[in-house]
Image: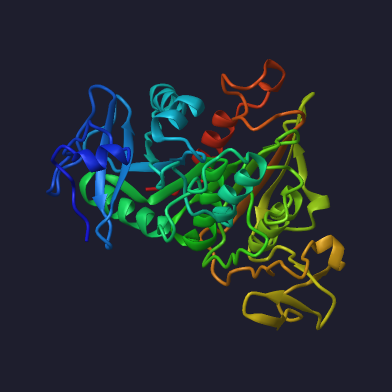
Length: 380
């Protein structure tokens, strides 16, 4: 069930954070219109269980009539909101600049989380609220990341269907980024909707140790994190993988060579990025020793026929509570870029934003992610 809400929210909905400004962008198919000014419009969907979900759509000034537009999902952090993450990342401004300077169209979609303190059911981030409670004992018990059982993957699918039908979205060019809890959500989309996304780029978002990531396709991947992040720590937690182990999973998924063969990019006083431009089905994939088994949620499975490079158990970084990763059989691209960056001293903020300290502005996450997405666009 997919409907557009065209009425003002009830008082109950207002208490749950439904924006007062709701716009009807059409309940019918329409020709793709040109935009003579910027548009920031709130939309509502009704989920199959009858609950309402909201999202904010930004369309830049200067879109060309009848041209389908690529879509960039930008997911807010725990306790955040769409307008807040738009302000922090300035992704809407970067999209406008890209259209003005290079003629590259994008629309940005900023989904709203669920819960009294809003969040998303990301790749293992159900532990997020419990971890916060352990750090800040004065938080009320109900402050968990999101409504129990909220299906944010289904929400994403419904948004894509709506945008493609009513807002001239190019559903062959979908991208996702997010910060913190929104980074966990972006990881989940990479794991569960890889064949529908051209690239994903989580910022300061890890993956749960026991989260089963079995994508149906390889997907370009970019990730950033600060070494001084105390909220989503670089070294992980009891529930979350350390950043290097999370990266190792995506190298495996995308069939990348040994990480020691990665190219160092963007080396500065605070930032080091590593990059593969040529991960593909022919890439070398990590393995355990021949015939060795690794723990999965469904039990022990042999991996000797699927991998070619040997890694020790400690190198692989899979403990008894962790989940082995399988590279998907099919590819969404012939060549899969993978890039990961660490920012020395960066706390839990978006790198290069106004919240970032001046010494970290040498890596502007918004520019880095935007350019990564542009390089991953499918030709139309």
